[in-house]
Length: 148
Image: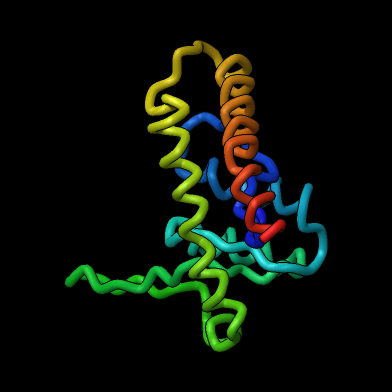
């Protein structure tokens, strides 16, 4: 998703695993951000490997900090003060909720709570079609805002 208008730029459908979201995010970053820029994400992306992959590509990781105390062990965040002290980090955290709005729209309006397709290819085609429909539904609001 791009932050200015909340439009979907691209999406990846992967098999469920512990690291598939992070691998897909790195793949999308390579395709759309290139060298330099920022990438926002939720606490699930605050892992050592993911943050290192982004920094290696000179992409600033604007992911939510995952620091909590479970009573037994403390988990430290991989996002430190060199990232969080900038105003851009706070702005990215505010815009980050828009991606959840896309998933909410897909589940309710586009009826993607449960897929009707079998196989990764067919499900992926339907997923991309639903993302395109989201962008088309969002366009009139953006055009009215631009004209006004």
